[in-house]
Length: 271
Length: 104
Image (tube, rainbow over all chains, first blue to last red; front, top):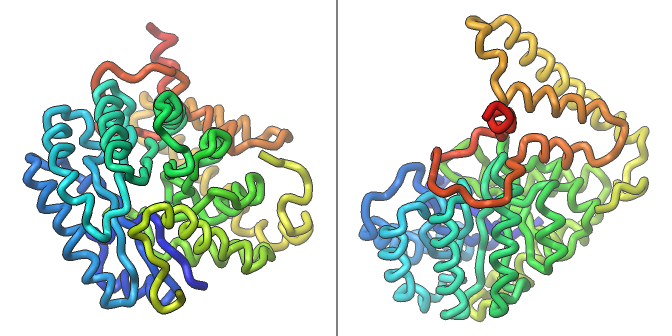
Protein backbone atom coordinates (compact mmCIF):
# COMPACT_ATOMS: atom_id res chain seq x y z
CA UNK A 1 0.00 0.00 0.00
CA UNK A 2 1.29 3.47 -0.86
CA UNK A 3 2.02 5.61 2.19
CA UNK A 4 3.45 8.97 3.24
CA UNK A 5 5.99 8.99 6.08
CA UNK A 6 5.18 12.19 7.98
CA UNK A 7 8.05 12.03 10.45
CA UNK A 8 11.43 10.41 9.90
CA UNK A 9 15.04 11.50 10.33
CA UNK A 10 16.70 10.26 7.18
CA UNK A 11 19.94 12.12 7.93
CA UNK A 12 20.46 9.31 10.48
CA UNK A 13 19.49 6.49 8.13
CA UNK A 14 21.28 4.58 5.38
CA UNK A 15 20.43 4.51 1.70
CA UNK A 16 19.31 0.92 2.26
CA UNK A 17 16.54 2.33 4.45
CA UNK A 18 15.37 4.51 1.55
CA UNK A 19 15.36 1.32 -0.54
CA UNK A 20 13.29 -0.59 2.03
CA UNK A 21 10.85 2.31 2.31
CA UNK A 22 10.44 2.53 -1.46
CA UNK A 23 9.93 -1.25 -1.70
CA UNK A 24 7.17 -1.09 0.91
CA UNK A 25 5.22 1.71 -0.79
CA UNK A 26 6.61 4.97 0.59
CA UNK A 27 6.01 7.75 -1.94
CA UNK A 28 6.82 10.85 0.16
CA UNK A 29 8.68 11.80 3.31
CA UNK A 30 8.64 14.81 5.60
CA UNK A 31 11.68 15.18 7.85
CA UNK A 32 11.61 17.54 10.84
CA UNK A 33 14.79 19.09 12.20
CA UNK A 34 15.79 17.32 15.43
CA UNK A 35 18.46 16.63 18.02
CA UNK A 36 21.59 14.90 16.74
CA UNK A 37 22.02 12.90 19.96
CA UNK A 38 24.43 15.52 21.24
CA UNK A 39 24.17 19.31 21.61
CA UNK A 40 25.50 21.35 18.71
CA UNK A 41 28.08 23.87 19.81
CA UNK A 42 27.18 26.76 17.51
CA UNK A 43 24.49 28.22 15.28
CA UNK A 44 26.80 27.57 12.34
CA UNK A 45 26.23 23.85 12.96
CA UNK A 46 22.53 24.41 12.37
CA UNK A 47 23.24 26.21 9.10
CA UNK A 48 25.10 23.14 7.89
CA UNK A 49 22.28 20.91 9.08
CA UNK A 50 19.61 23.04 7.34
CA UNK A 51 21.62 22.87 4.12
CA UNK A 52 21.74 19.08 4.44
CA UNK A 53 17.94 18.98 4.93
CA UNK A 54 17.11 21.34 2.07
CA UNK A 55 19.74 20.47 -0.53
CA UNK A 56 21.36 17.06 0.00
CA UNK A 57 18.61 14.85 1.44
CA UNK A 58 15.98 15.56 -1.28
CA UNK A 59 18.43 14.27 -3.89
CA UNK A 60 19.11 11.10 -1.91
CA UNK A 61 15.36 10.43 -1.61
CA UNK A 62 14.75 11.14 -5.29
CA UNK A 63 17.05 8.27 -6.27
CA UNK A 64 14.43 5.95 -4.80
CA UNK A 65 11.43 7.74 -6.31
CA UNK A 66 10.46 9.30 -2.96
CA UNK A 67 9.40 12.94 -2.72
CA UNK A 68 11.11 14.70 0.14
CA UNK A 69 10.03 17.65 2.31
CA UNK A 70 11.40 19.10 5.53
CA UNK A 71 10.59 21.23 8.60
CA UNK A 72 13.09 23.57 10.27
CA UNK A 73 13.75 24.64 13.85
CA UNK A 74 16.02 24.33 16.84
CA UNK A 75 14.65 21.20 18.49
CA UNK A 76 13.29 21.06 22.07
CA UNK A 77 16.30 19.10 23.38
CA UNK A 78 18.45 22.17 22.74
CA UNK A 79 15.75 24.69 23.64
CA UNK A 80 17.16 25.32 27.11
CA UNK A 81 20.06 27.33 25.62
CA UNK A 82 18.31 30.65 24.98
CA UNK A 83 21.27 32.34 23.31
CA UNK A 84 21.75 29.51 20.85
CA UNK A 85 18.00 29.36 20.21
CA UNK A 86 17.83 33.04 19.32
CA UNK A 87 20.82 32.79 17.01
CA UNK A 88 19.24 29.85 15.19
CA UNK A 89 15.79 31.47 15.04
CA UNK A 90 17.40 34.45 13.35
CA UNK A 91 18.84 32.18 10.64
CA UNK A 92 15.72 30.12 9.83
CA UNK A 93 13.76 32.66 7.66
CA UNK A 94 16.29 32.57 4.83
CA UNK A 95 15.41 28.88 4.29
CA UNK A 96 11.61 29.22 4.45
CA UNK A 97 11.14 30.01 0.75
CA UNK A 98 12.91 26.81 -0.24
CA UNK A 99 10.51 24.60 -2.26
CA UNK A 100 10.87 21.61 0.08
CA UNK A 101 10.39 23.45 3.39
CA UNK A 102 6.81 22.89 4.63
CA UNK A 103 6.97 24.66 7.97
CA UNK A 104 8.42 24.95 11.47
CA UNK A 105 9.15 21.71 13.34
CA UNK A 106 9.59 19.66 15.31
CA UNK A 107 9.19 22.26 18.03
CA UNK A 108 7.81 21.70 21.51
CA UNK A 109 9.15 20.76 24.92
CA UNK A 110 11.63 18.24 26.32
CA UNK A 111 11.82 18.39 30.14
CA UNK A 112 9.21 21.18 30.23
CA UNK A 113 11.35 24.04 31.54
CA UNK A 114 10.65 27.78 31.44
CA UNK A 115 13.46 28.32 28.93
CA UNK A 116 12.20 25.54 26.68
CA UNK A 117 8.76 27.15 26.79
CA UNK A 118 10.15 30.54 25.75
CA UNK A 119 12.03 28.94 22.87
CA UNK A 120 8.83 27.13 21.84
CA UNK A 121 6.79 30.36 21.93
CA UNK A 122 9.37 32.12 19.75
CA UNK A 123 9.21 29.34 17.17
CA UNK A 124 5.41 29.56 17.14
CA UNK A 125 5.65 33.32 16.61
CA UNK A 126 8.06 32.76 13.72
CA UNK A 127 5.67 30.27 12.12
CA UNK A 128 2.76 32.69 12.43
CA UNK A 129 4.82 35.58 11.05
CA UNK A 130 5.73 33.54 7.96
CA UNK A 131 2.38 31.66 7.62
CA UNK A 132 3.99 28.25 8.11
CA UNK A 133 2.50 24.91 9.11
CA UNK A 134 3.65 23.69 12.54
CA UNK A 135 4.83 20.22 13.59
CA UNK A 136 4.98 19.69 17.35
CA UNK A 137 7.20 17.30 19.33
CA UNK A 138 5.69 16.29 22.67
CA UNK A 139 7.98 15.17 25.51
CA UNK A 140 8.89 11.59 26.25
CA UNK A 141 7.65 9.19 28.90
CA UNK A 142 6.73 10.74 32.27
CA UNK A 143 6.97 14.25 30.81
CA UNK A 144 4.49 13.68 27.99
CA UNK A 145 1.21 14.42 29.75
CA UNK A 146 2.34 17.62 31.46
CA UNK A 147 4.25 18.82 28.39
CA UNK A 148 1.38 18.16 26.00
CA UNK A 149 -1.07 19.98 28.27
CA UNK A 150 1.21 23.04 28.44
CA UNK A 151 1.78 22.99 24.67
CA UNK A 152 -1.96 22.80 23.96
CA UNK A 153 -2.71 25.62 26.44
CA UNK A 154 0.06 27.78 24.99
CA UNK A 155 -1.19 27.33 21.43
CA UNK A 156 -4.84 27.96 22.35
CA UNK A 157 -3.92 31.13 24.22
CA UNK A 158 -2.73 32.67 20.93
CA UNK A 159 -5.76 33.72 18.87
CA UNK A 160 -3.65 33.71 15.69
CA UNK A 161 -3.21 29.93 15.85
CA UNK A 162 -5.44 27.79 13.64
CA UNK A 163 -5.39 24.28 15.18
CA UNK A 164 -6.08 22.79 11.74
CA UNK A 165 -2.59 23.93 10.67
CA UNK A 166 -0.83 22.30 13.62
CA UNK A 167 0.03 18.60 14.03
CA UNK A 168 0.84 17.54 17.60
CA UNK A 169 2.99 14.44 17.32
CA UNK A 170 3.96 11.45 19.49
CA UNK A 171 0.47 11.17 20.99
CA UNK A 172 -0.27 8.24 23.28
CA UNK A 173 -3.36 7.00 25.11
CA UNK A 174 -3.27 9.76 27.75
CA UNK A 175 -2.72 12.68 25.34
CA UNK A 176 -4.45 11.85 22.05
CA UNK A 177 -7.84 12.94 23.40
CA UNK A 178 -6.72 16.44 24.38
CA UNK A 179 -5.08 17.00 20.98
CA UNK A 180 -8.13 15.97 18.99
CA UNK A 181 -10.74 17.62 21.23
CA UNK A 182 -9.05 21.01 20.74
CA UNK A 183 -9.13 20.67 16.96
CA UNK A 184 -5.47 19.86 16.28
CA UNK A 185 -4.14 17.17 13.99
CA UNK A 186 -2.27 14.48 15.87
CA UNK A 187 0.41 11.93 15.10
CA UNK A 188 0.92 8.49 16.61
CA UNK A 189 4.57 7.48 16.50
CA UNK A 190 5.39 3.81 15.98
CA UNK A 191 8.59 3.65 17.98
CA UNK A 192 9.76 0.72 20.10
CA UNK A 193 9.96 1.10 23.87
CA UNK A 194 9.27 4.80 24.30
CA UNK A 195 6.22 5.51 22.11
CA UNK A 196 3.49 3.33 20.53
CA UNK A 197 3.47 -0.13 18.99
CA UNK A 198 1.47 -0.86 15.81
CA UNK A 199 -1.02 -2.73 18.03
CA UNK A 200 -1.60 0.22 20.36
CA UNK A 201 -1.82 2.61 17.41
CA UNK A 202 -4.54 0.46 15.88
CA UNK A 203 -6.34 0.39 19.26
CA UNK A 204 -6.29 4.20 19.47
CA UNK A 205 -7.70 4.53 15.96
CA UNK A 206 -10.46 2.04 16.78
CA UNK A 207 -11.39 4.12 19.85
CA UNK A 208 -10.98 7.65 18.44
CA UNK A 209 -11.75 7.13 14.74
CA UNK A 210 -9.51 8.05 11.79
CA UNK A 211 -10.14 11.81 11.49
CA UNK A 212 -7.08 14.11 11.87
CA UNK A 213 -4.80 11.21 12.82
CA UNK A 214 -1.58 10.20 11.06
CA UNK A 215 0.98 7.54 11.96
CA UNK A 216 4.74 7.80 11.54
CA UNK A 217 7.97 6.01 12.46
CA UNK A 218 10.14 8.90 13.72
CA UNK A 219 12.97 6.56 12.76
CA UNK A 220 16.30 8.09 13.72
CA UNK A 221 19.62 7.12 15.31
CA UNK A 222 17.88 5.26 18.18
CA UNK A 223 16.24 1.83 18.17
CA UNK A 224 13.58 2.34 15.48
CA UNK A 225 12.53 1.09 12.07
CA UNK A 226 11.96 3.01 8.83
CA UNK A 227 9.25 0.50 7.82
CA UNK A 228 7.03 0.99 10.88
CA UNK A 229 4.11 2.23 8.77
CA UNK A 230 3.96 -1.00 6.70
CA UNK A 231 3.98 -2.88 10.02
CA UNK A 232 0.99 -0.77 11.11
CA UNK A 233 -0.75 -1.57 7.81
CA UNK A 234 -0.22 -5.28 8.49
CA UNK A 235 -1.64 -4.94 12.01
CA UNK A 236 -4.76 -3.17 10.72
CA UNK A 237 -5.27 -5.85 8.04
CA UNK A 238 -4.74 -8.57 10.65
CA UNK A 239 -7.81 -7.21 12.48
CA UNK A 240 -9.90 -7.08 9.33
CA UNK A 241 -9.94 -3.31 8.80
CA UNK A 242 -10.65 -2.24 5.24
CA UNK A 243 -7.93 -1.02 2.92
CA UNK A 244 -10.00 2.16 2.45
CA UNK A 245 -9.67 2.94 6.18
CA UNK A 246 -5.97 2.09 6.28
CA UNK A 247 -5.26 4.17 3.18
CA UNK A 248 -7.02 7.15 4.76
CA UNK A 249 -4.65 7.04 7.73
CA UNK A 250 -1.35 6.37 5.96
CA UNK A 251 -1.93 8.29 2.72
CA UNK A 252 -5.03 10.50 2.48
CA UNK A 253 -4.78 12.12 5.93
CA UNK A 254 -1.15 13.18 5.42
CA UNK A 255 -2.10 14.68 2.06
CA UNK A 256 -5.03 16.57 3.63
CA UNK A 257 -2.80 18.09 6.31
CA UNK A 258 0.29 18.75 4.20
CA UNK A 259 -1.67 20.22 1.27
CA UNK A 260 -2.32 23.26 3.44
CA UNK A 261 1.17 24.23 2.32
CA UNK A 262 1.11 25.28 -1.33
CA UNK A 263 4.53 23.67 -1.72
CA UNK A 264 3.29 20.16 -1.06
CA UNK A 265 2.58 18.24 -4.24
CA UNK A 266 1.04 14.80 -4.57
CA UNK A 267 3.63 12.16 -5.38
CA UNK A 268 4.27 12.51 -9.09
CA UNK A 269 3.71 8.98 -10.38
CA UNK A 270 0.21 8.66 -8.89
CA UNK A 271 -1.13 12.16 -9.30
CA UNK B 1 -12.71 7.60 23.62
CA UNK B 2 -14.95 4.64 23.02
CA UNK B 3 -14.48 1.43 25.02
CA UNK B 4 -17.79 -0.02 23.85
CA UNK B 5 -17.87 -3.61 22.57
CA UNK B 6 -17.68 -3.54 18.79
CA UNK B 7 -15.04 -0.84 18.36
CA UNK B 8 -12.62 -3.66 17.50
CA UNK B 9 -13.85 -5.58 14.46
CA UNK B 10 -12.70 -8.98 15.79
CA UNK B 11 -14.76 -11.17 18.12
CA UNK B 12 -13.43 -11.95 21.59
CA UNK B 13 -12.78 -15.52 20.45
CA UNK B 14 -10.86 -14.30 17.40
CA UNK B 15 -8.82 -11.91 19.56
CA UNK B 16 -7.94 -14.72 21.95
CA UNK B 17 -6.96 -17.04 19.11
CA UNK B 18 -4.88 -14.36 17.39
CA UNK B 19 -3.23 -12.51 20.29
CA UNK B 20 -3.10 -14.84 23.31
CA UNK B 21 0.29 -16.42 22.69
CA UNK B 22 2.16 -13.15 22.04
CA UNK B 23 0.64 -11.49 25.13
CA UNK B 24 1.32 -14.57 27.26
CA UNK B 25 4.98 -14.18 26.25
CA UNK B 26 4.96 -10.48 27.26
CA UNK B 27 3.47 -11.37 30.65
CA UNK B 28 6.17 -13.96 31.26
CA UNK B 29 8.82 -11.38 30.35
CA UNK B 30 7.46 -9.07 33.08
CA UNK B 31 7.44 -11.92 35.60
CA UNK B 32 11.01 -12.80 34.64
CA UNK B 33 12.05 -9.16 35.08
CA UNK B 34 10.60 -9.09 38.62
CA UNK B 35 12.32 -12.40 39.46
CA UNK B 36 15.58 -11.00 38.08
CA UNK B 37 15.27 -8.00 40.37
CA UNK B 38 14.91 -10.42 43.31
CA UNK B 39 18.08 -12.19 42.20
CA UNK B 40 20.04 -9.00 41.64
CA UNK B 41 23.08 -8.03 43.69
CA UNK B 42 22.85 -5.14 46.18
CA UNK B 43 19.18 -5.33 47.13
CA UNK B 44 19.40 -1.87 48.72
CA UNK B 45 18.11 -0.33 45.46
CA UNK B 46 14.88 -2.29 45.60
CA UNK B 47 13.12 0.91 46.75
CA UNK B 48 13.80 2.62 43.41
CA UNK B 49 10.88 4.93 42.57
CA UNK B 50 10.60 3.40 39.10
CA UNK B 51 9.95 0.00 40.66
CA UNK B 52 7.37 1.53 43.00
CA UNK B 53 5.58 3.00 39.98
CA UNK B 54 5.94 -0.30 38.14
CA UNK B 55 4.24 -2.17 40.99
CA UNK B 56 1.41 0.40 41.02
CA UNK B 57 1.00 -0.13 37.29
CA UNK B 58 0.72 -3.89 37.85
CA UNK B 59 -2.21 -3.24 40.20
CA UNK B 60 -3.97 -1.32 37.41
CA UNK B 61 -3.24 -4.20 35.05
CA UNK B 62 -5.28 -6.52 37.27
CA UNK B 63 -8.29 -4.19 37.22
CA UNK B 64 -11.40 -5.31 35.35
CA UNK B 65 -12.28 -1.73 34.34
CA UNK B 66 -11.42 -0.61 30.78
CA UNK B 67 -8.96 2.21 30.18
CA UNK B 68 -6.01 0.37 31.73
CA UNK B 69 -3.40 1.77 29.32
CA UNK B 70 -4.37 5.36 30.03
CA UNK B 71 -4.40 4.71 33.77
CA UNK B 72 -0.94 3.16 33.64
CA UNK B 73 0.33 6.07 31.56
CA UNK B 74 -0.89 8.38 34.34
CA UNK B 75 0.77 6.27 37.06
CA UNK B 76 4.11 6.97 35.36
CA UNK B 77 3.36 10.64 34.52
CA UNK B 78 4.50 13.86 36.16
CA UNK B 79 1.32 15.18 37.86
CA UNK B 80 2.60 18.74 38.35
CA UNK B 81 1.41 21.60 36.15
CA UNK B 82 4.15 24.25 36.26
CA UNK B 83 7.30 24.26 34.10
CA UNK B 84 10.63 23.49 35.80
CA UNK B 85 12.66 26.58 36.69
CA UNK B 86 15.71 25.08 34.98
CA UNK B 87 16.79 21.90 33.23
CA UNK B 88 17.48 19.14 35.78
CA UNK B 89 18.48 16.33 33.41
CA UNK B 90 18.60 15.92 29.65
CA UNK B 91 16.21 13.00 29.27
CA UNK B 92 13.14 11.46 30.87
CA UNK B 93 13.59 8.17 32.74
CA UNK B 94 10.15 6.59 32.37
CA UNK B 95 8.52 7.35 35.73
CA UNK B 96 7.97 10.41 37.91
CA UNK B 97 9.32 10.26 41.47
CA UNK B 98 6.17 11.16 43.44
CA UNK B 99 7.66 9.63 46.57
CA UNK B 100 10.42 12.25 46.64
CA UNK B 101 7.75 14.92 47.13
CA UNK B 102 6.24 12.94 50.01
CA UNK B 103 9.63 12.69 51.72
CA UNK B 104 10.15 16.47 51.57
